[in-house]
Amino acid sequence: MFKPIASALRPPTPLAIALAMTVLAVGCGGGSDEGPASREGSTAREGSGPEGGSGGSGSAADTSVTTSSLTKVRFVNRVNAFCTREREELLERMGVYFQKHQSRGGVPAEVLPEANRAVYVPIIEAEIAKIQALGAPAGDEAEIEAFLGAQRKGVEELAAQKEVKSRFQIERIFKEAGDLARVYGLKACASG
Image (cartoon, rainbow, N blue to C red):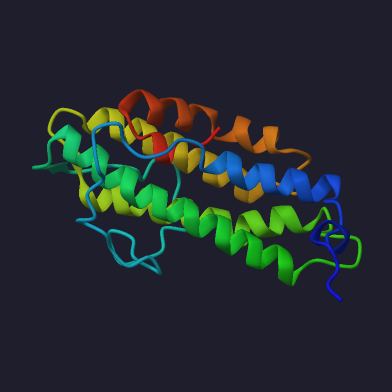
């Protein structure tokens, strides 16, 4: 009466595997090693940049941060918490986007750059805006601005991509930002 699950599933196409790996590469990392992440400081996502805009047309130069009263541990916990939530949402929204745009043979290759612009870019921009709005711990402003500048540069480069051939292309775009995030302890925000 019921088909075995194995016969009901089609094997994934190489493009589908590459797309899933791309999405997963975005969120490599995890929570802070400092303990449970704080849920404080979360803000609404849509159009919630520091000045109320979406931050979509900025350049790498507009990544300045103010000084906050947070300790580094609290800052890292908060930022890792919302990056974790953003990356989970990224996976969900990318899946929905791919389902909407798939054809009989799977997801067409030209859909990935469109998905990056429609889903990935706004989510990373929201992370940048939230970090800017939170402010950096005293004395760490330059490190956070460097990370945000590299993240913004990656967003701009990704948005300009006409073709994405592999997840490695995206990892290279965000390598600098990922390295800076990991060094500071923002593992959940590390890409590349």
